[in-house]
Length: 316
Image (cartoon, rainbow, N blue to C red; front, side):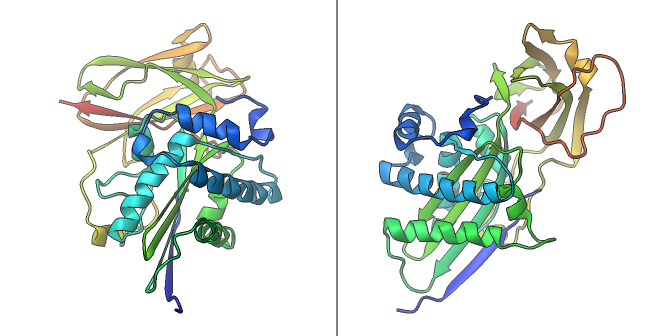
């Protein structure tokens, strides 16, 4: 049977061991990580799916190498987040960076327990026939999705730029195949900070804090916090009309400079007190720099990438 295929691409917006990204991890290594990860167990990859993702990981790293970007490692939690999003999208016939709960990629990763920064690529395809539900078919479809990203040309090359972004050091990979729908997500992660005691939910007016540490010779440069309303559910028909997403909201809640953050340093950690006055979601970006800045000076985050994707729910 000849397949009639429609393809849609969506453009994403545009602490690990220092040596780990430079070495090729084995299947057994990732299997141990997969077996030990307790979050989102219902979206856990079996051994065959994990093998397919490691093949895809190698393809992604070859793309990065061509553009002088270091290899990324597979992130298990982000892969499960991606699996869940792919399944919902395939089973409901939509393609979007939002899900039916109205959540963006950074919401979904944070609500699953992730604190790092995430940037998403989305690929979708369907057929009037029936897909062959085999490993080779799935692998071919994932490779087709990635190849379509890499074939982009400026200025419409958001997916490609995301793939070859030199700050990324991990990636989560998700896929889902039904009889006639396929979805493939790439969730690129920037993991350079260590996090402790990050609250997932607090009350408005309640005193709280976030604790983080910087790896290597990096220091806090700027903290920027955005507020947004709680997501509103979306229908598949609405989701199919969406495009790229913004990695922020229109409501800036708080800025903290390097010298302000430096006051909260305790040993090798930063314990930053926070109070949120209004209900909603608060999205926290932490920027770093090689210089430790303790006195006021001019700061500019242009060209810098945030290394956190913390989302805190604030209730009345």
